[in-house]
Length: 115
Image: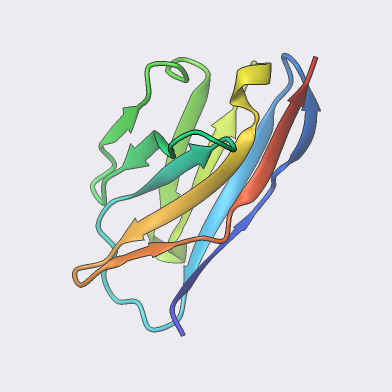
């Protein structure tokens, strides 16, 4: 069974840091882009960061300079290092992986930033 498992969310104070991880498992042979979306209740899911298989990266303007996405292709895992967190970063963070045939989604991990 192919799946993405996220970990590392939690509660942090404004200005703090968190790192979330997303590991792909199962019968997966090729993963193209991977990345993170986030969603707040009542709002659309928004793209936070993405990383291509060759390491090319893209970020939402609101997180550029604070968040860093990285990838370990040998482990089929991506990471999102989040620094200088703001209350507006509070959301459920979902990772995704683009396979040749479809897109996998993780179950989501809650990140809460308290002021």
